[in-house]
Structure formats: structure tokens, C-alpha cells
Image (cartoon, rainbow over all chains, first blue to last red; front, side, top):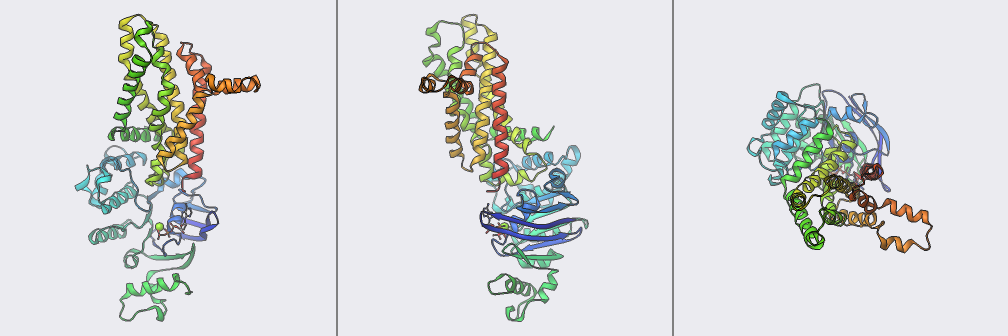
Length: 250
Length: 244
Ligand SMILES: Nc1ncnc2c1ncn2[C@@H]1O[C@H](COP(=O)(O)OP(=O)(O)OP(=O)(O)O)[C@@H](O)[C@H]1O
Ligand SMILES: [Mg+2]
């Protein structure tokens, strides 16, 4: 269980995250949506303990991220926005480094590394330095790093950005097939992805939650004037999305 | 292996997987050769010691160590990997210490590779090798002091060049505060206690003492304190500025 209670984050005079509260239970795959600058990445940075909130608390499985960061962080696998990784390292030595930090060793370490290399199809570039990889492969390295220790909590900031359609499909399958006791938060701008993998969607706008329900419920709630005729259901979700995030709506 | 060790290993590996380590070592050795044998008048002095070799180290470090330290945190912020690093289950001190130690060991390797100079002086005469060992230790400690300052400056900015310039400037203050130019500027009008305080903070004063073969615990403690203080400052700066 992740519990986020009343987190606010101010930058100078600008409030990026404004009194946000929600919790995510085991088995939920939460889609985190919102227009550019809504505060999605900022919220994820706060949940993962990179950024301290101006006020509010985050608790990961009972571990407060501020008071008990080591045990909270050990539970989390995180793909930051832009999938940063060390450009001078080869894919394999980067994953070994992460495995060491995560406390994996011996046969288990080898087995986990092999597994994630298979899961995100990295075997062809294993020994290449990361800076020479294409954008999509860099993203896959970031994903591999996040799932390496089979974390209970997975936080992915735009995991499919820059991936080819096949890989997008693969990553969606990967998220869907995660064990049922996991907690997943994914941010994305691709709304059909939400219908495809998420059990729940939260839409935030200007740092505040404007909708929180199952994707199908949001589709059903799309106001008629936002629906363009002959649109399929992902289109309806888009209609709802626009209805709650564009100016003049709500 | 502890978390500090894992960070240390990665950082050292990173130095050697780019040309940085090799360029640093080669330039360090060449500059030492020039300073010692040419400018330092190693042969002309006709004395079996390494005074000319060591007395250039503060000035050599002034430009070389900031180059080693400038990327420590600035690069991490520029590439965004700081977000990765800081959300892994490690303590900030593991990262600060691991990175510092990797750079310090690299500077130690460069220093050890000057051994042909030590062999030369032993071949030509019979120097006091105890004094030379003390000076090597002192030189390495001083490098650590420069590096710790560099670590803090690198944490202040995401631009490595700015970090370099800031480090050179601050290190210059620390080196030169014991030099006659600075002390003369203060003597006459400033109280003696201030003069002593300025001289006490100088790397030069403490290094010269060690260089003369007086391995005083106070000089060693001075460098240990400088390293600790600047690494603590690094951690504080990183904590405050990491997300900007
Ligand atoms: N360090 C910072 N200093 C000042 N403002 C910031 C900082 N970081 C983020 N912001 C602002 O906070 C707001 C939210 O940013 P955030 O990155 O969380 O948006 P997002 O929802 O992830 O957007 P996107 O879809 O473009 O990724 C933006 O307006 C951004 O400019
Ligand atoms: Mg974002």
C-alpha cells in the first residue's frame, strides 16, 4: 500500500503539486495522466524520495519515505523521466552496478540480470556502451534497471516514450503480467495505454486531482460535446481527458 | 562490499573507461618531470632529497585536481543520473564518500607513478627515505583537501566548467593564504592572531611542514579536518540543490 497524504510542492512562488492525496493498493496499476507541466513527474519524484515535499507525507508499505528512506527505497523500482543512466558504462556493467546496490549477489544476481535482459530484449546490445544506444534502447535499459530487483512498487515515468510499437506492446504485457501483489504507477500521454494496462486512472491538472476512477468509468463519463462522432473507446477516454484538463472545462 | 565500496568501484571504473584517468596521469607525470628536473633544479642543487619535486605540488594540484573533481556531481546533475542515484537505497554519505575516494585513489595512483624520481634520487645519493615517505603522504593528503573542495563546488552547479573555475579560485585562497604575499598584505595593520589564523588555514604551511620531514599529528589532522568539512558541505549542498 502506498499512501500519499496532502503533499504540496512549491518552486519559488509556483505550486507544482497542490495538496495531493491518494493511495494505491496491491494489485492496482495506476495510470497517472495529465497535460504537460501538470505535476506528474514532480509527484513521482516525491513518492520515490528524490524530492522532499514542501508539506505532506508519503508512506510506502508503512515506511515513511522521509523518516525511513532506506527501507522505503528498497521496495521501489523507479524509471525517472528521460530514463537517465551512466553513458560511459556498458549495459551489462550498468545492470551489475544496480544489482550490487540492490544487494543481489551470486547466482541470484546473474539470474535476475538474465531475466530482465530477456524481458526487455536487451541481449543484442548487452556489451555496448549506453551512450551509443538509440533512444528506445536507452529507455529499455532504464526499465530493466527499475525491475531488476523484482520490486514490490514500480514507478514508471513515461516508460513507453520513444519505444517502437512492438516494444510498447511488450512493455504493456510486462506491466500486465506483473505479479498480482505489486503496486504500479505509470505516467503516460498515450491514453489507449491506460485502457490497455491500468486498473485505475488519476488525471491531474495544475497539481490537483481532477478525476480518479477506472478507465472504463472515465470513458462512460465523457461529456457528449467532447466526443467526436465515430470515435472508438480510446477516443472517448481522450474526450474525457480533454474535458477535465482544457481551459474552461470542469 | 558496502554501498560506499560499490559506488567507489563504479566511479573508478568510469575514470578508467574514459581517457580522463590516462590523460590525468600522463599530464601529472610530465608536469612533475618538468617542474622537478628543469624548474626545480633537481640536479644543480646537488642535494639528495625531493624538496624541489614536492614543493611544486600545491601549484600543480591547483590546476589538476579541480579538473578531476569538476565532474563529480555536476555531470551527475547534468545527465539526470543524480535522480537515479538518489532514489537507490543508499545513503547520501555513501555516494559522497565513494565518489571522493575514487578520485582520491586516482590521484594517489598518479602520485605513486612518480616513483622513478624517487629511484633516481636513491641512485644518485642516499636521501632520507623517511622524509620522502612523509612528504608523499602529505602530498596525497593535500590532494584530498583539494578534491574535497572540488566535490563541494561540483555539487553547487550542473556546469563542470564553472565547478572547475570555482574550485581553482577557492583552492588558490587556501594555498596562497600562507604565502608571504598574502601575509605581508595583512601584517602591519591586522592583529597577529588574525595573521596566525590565516596562516593556519593555509595548505602551504601544513604541507611545507610535512615536506620537511616533520610528520606532526596536527598537520595530518588539519588535512583530515579540511577533507571532512568540505565533504560534509558537499552533502549539504547536494541535499539542498539536487532537484534544481
Ligand atoms: N526544479 C524546478 N524549478 C521550478 N519549477 C519546476 C521545477 N521542476 C518542475 N517545475 C515545474 O513544475 C511543473 C510540473 O512539472 P512536472 O515535470 O511534474 O510536469 P509533468 O506533469 O511531468 O509534465 P510532462 O507531461 O511534460 O512530463 C512544471 O510547470 C515545471 O515547470
Ligand atoms: Mg513528466
